[in-house]
Length: 353
Image (tube, rainbow, N blue to C red; front, side, top):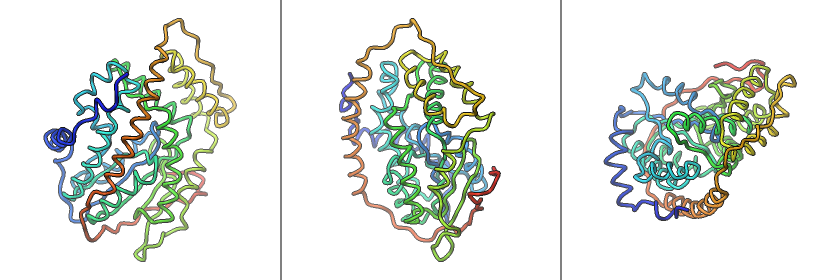
């Protein structure tokens, strides 16, 4: 087992990598804005945030473009990430998360200082993961917009496995999100959505179905009140509980059965549980069969135990990082951009893109 503390970078090394590599490669190629915008695309791992991020990037292209901030983009800059992936690709991402998370926070601070439009992909696994960067951008005079993915548990968990399978087939290894991280984000999205409504943490909020389909939108008026009665959490819960169409069910089943055939045997239990969770939402005409038992040797159980022990250490490290972040100074700013968004009622029969 790799000791998490053995791969944690020193403050000096982390800063060197950030300013020498991440800033020139990932951050320093967009225009400074007089009235900047910070958008947050939020959802649990596997929720399909990428399509919505691309849509928002296109929206900001006329302003000179935006920088996407995502901790996953910074993991490859860790000097030991490639080695860790080759040794255990189910644990590598978690091991470097303290450093990639630190770089994500540094990127947000750097972009706020330079007043560059940003789109941050976040899991919202707890309210602080949203509220802290929001505070940074608000102090720098940004307009804050939150786009939240409303995706059922079975779809996002299958999305995690599908992404991992594609990465393994293309590169020989992948990035597998740990189940605990998925589940904490799945519940965290709801509590953070409620906080956005109650505490007015954003100037505008929207809810999307997987595939960049807009379901709900609301924004603050000039007097600081929501334009429409707030219902962000209810919009997410309603979409998560909506029965799937035949097309959605067939697409889900096709991905499920391909993964049942292709994935390593130690992931078959996860697939079986995903089928259980999906069953109430599937169209009655679609069935999911259990993964076939394979004669291939499974990985040692020590992998799971290594993951558990590593995560315990990472949780402690993450708590320390969050406490340090809370004590960081922030830059003051001024006005925000006032641009209302369209609102689709929760009871509209058909969503629009």
